[in-house]
Length: 235
Image 1 (cartoon, rainbow, N blue to C red):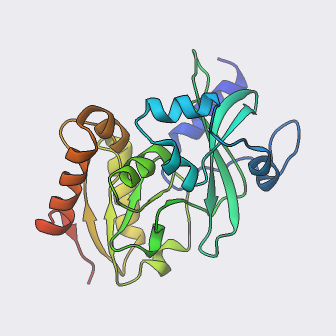
Image 2: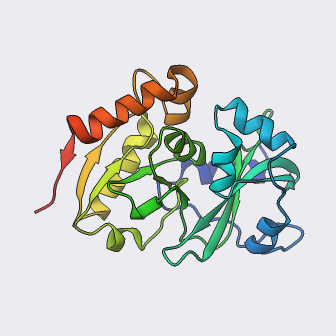
């Protein structure tokens, strides 16, 4: 295992909220805004085929600002903007269309402090936090606003979520539970609810692909509005 691969493995093992990304694109030195501006509309690209394969209608991805980059640090990827609370671009997150062997699935550039938002984002009630870009897009397919952290820290979130209901809808696995514990400590002035995807699915995109939008929407409606469970509160 070479040093670069060991470094990449180290990044993946870092606790939630502690990942540090290169501030600019390696080799070219382009800033996040420049790379986002260079991105292509998904329509007619391999990016369109990729998002539709994951059951995301192209118009939903487009409205969320998702674009296609045929050379995202050397490989084609769909890219998504991550903004702060003032809608200033902080980072651009890329999800590669494919990977082989030890290749990364994702690559992000920017100083951090942002989050990927769909529909009303943190203005919605409740505020729903998920792990990945495609989890947030999957909830948008079902009519729900969401914020995707992609494992990064947005330090302004506790303030905008103060005295509000926050749903921690992270993946149903050990990293997901670690993220829940992280945010339970972070949101000391919010009413917190834990919600996992339906059935035996790991994440919301898997649930959408396996169960369908109607079933996932019903699951969200029931557990968020009809019979909320797994709620934590702080004194």
